[in-house]
Length: 499
Image (cartoon, rainbow, N blue to C red; front, side, top):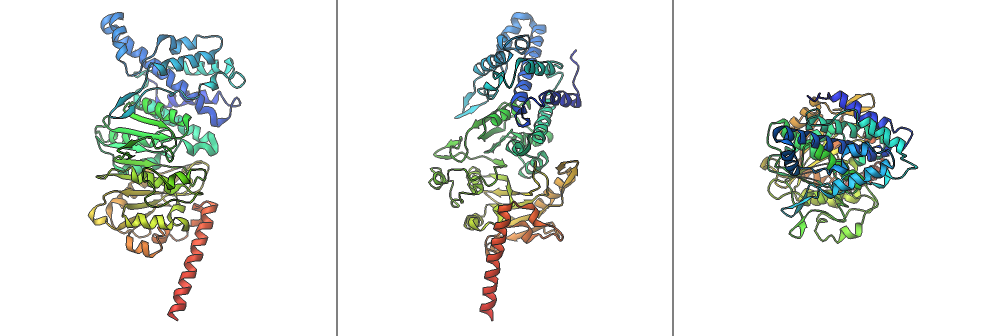
């Protein structure tokens, strides 16, 4: 009988392999080596477990026949045990195994989309054959570390394996420094977004900058935890970083999710999901797009063939509203809704004023939630969650919910997070549609437009003693100062005219 691994044992076991790499390679590259090995060991152990059950049921011939119908095929020459028993050129043996597994597990074309498949899932294979960086001795140590436990379903159920994988992603984010946010978003913030969006069975969900897939997985977990059907939810994602998109696909598989389409490409320049000459629409969209990037093709977006510039063309130095418009265009006409994690600058910067005005006039903005500090790796900057909906409820038409949750944060050592109580308080305020002193306020679009389309949360829900400059980047602080200067000039002109 296979002994089950506790979650603590699994987490220590997974992290120890990364610890073995310390001093050998840069911490930001740990994930490129560890994740493929975790996935490789897992799928081989699950295959062996499945084969053994078939053999016990009907003998070897029966098992050989039935194993061909497994979701993931493992050629025996590409099995973990073959690589583990290799004594020379181990890196090349790994690469050969990875390629063989990818080749026999192509994605399937279903309803015009590419579903699942392992093509490219093991990431950059050249890193394994560079003996200057990864000599056989280091790879041998890694294989030995991973060979200590069996990662079968009996030993490690899908939910536990997925949790362990998420733990590893979080640990890598801590070690990776400034690159962490490229593939990891604080999971308690994602839980808040999932609670607000309330994914339903049979719906579709999309993340245009999906990183390691955590937002997609957390939304499906929301359904699973409620005991509702989650397996028929259609999952879509796009990620510009090849290595990170591979991690997302492994992450989904290890969580028991097979019905997904994850594409590695640039969402702004080459959106992957097109239907009827426009970007495909989804029931739920959630994202943590890169903040205020400067290196993007503004000219192409100005002449976007899919009409994603319907609010206007953002400035070259800040692509935030390019991502926002892509997301708004990707929401279904019936019940499309989205949650986007953004820097506060998008709420007040003068050069984006006309874009905000058009968004308010179209009445797609439903709520803005200001979050507390230190929820993002290696940055004290605070962010906000923008909630939009294609068809707002009648009692919210031409109104926006403002929630200032800057004080709703818990810190333990260097880690900041939202507790269940914080999430419940924010979600309750969002659903109550009532003003709550120093926390929540419902503001009309008319008032927002009269305020020069400034939708800064602290302008409408002010907390005494809060240093709002701490939530901004340097460039956004300058933008806020400029806005204040322009507002002062306008107020002085009004005063002069009155006199």
